[in-house]
Length: 281
Image 1 (cartoon, rainbow, N blue to C red):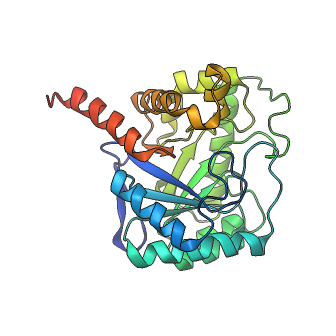
Image 2: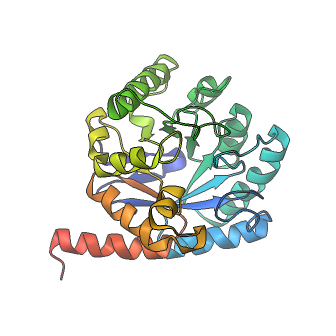
């Protein structure tokens, strides 16, 4: 696997050490921080803080994908994410990711300055593949999800958890390549909490390196999720310790990108890990 992921306009991500993706939800109903960053000025301030705390990517989402979340119209999603992307791009040369499944949002977000498309539906929605294929240097994160957000947690089942997810990844990689999207543009995310039981989630975390055989950078997104809350009996606002433990285990098992709400604390944990690995004491 290459250690450098090239992005638009000369930007790049270096995976010699883990990269932190800071979450910026410009939604009224996200499970953890819904409604806090709807105003573009407030979103910009939050993004600047995330970057100062150690994020290298800002991941902007305008539609909640929590279990049971309702669909959001195209116009509403555009109105949420595009002003935020433009505001951040005017003030920073950081990597910007757009968290969306809609082809038109992808297109407008890339034109506004986004470098990465982070799609929980892995470019399976109408025109998504063709839209992203037009932009030769935009990276794409393909996430595994069983079902759809409204129903994905209704008794998810796998014949073989790891084989089923890897088969899905292989099929989506082939679909991307057929559409003209180069292999080296791709990132994979096994999708903690997206059509998985509590047991599934912790099996994936414990054997996260199993997905390294596909030869692409891996993203882990488990920050503040119900897999933490249900295990520890903690409300969303009290899941920091569990989230940090999950991030650490994911990195030790091969994750190259960690998608988190609590950037500063995650950066501290990863810096301690790196010091131990390199003997910088």
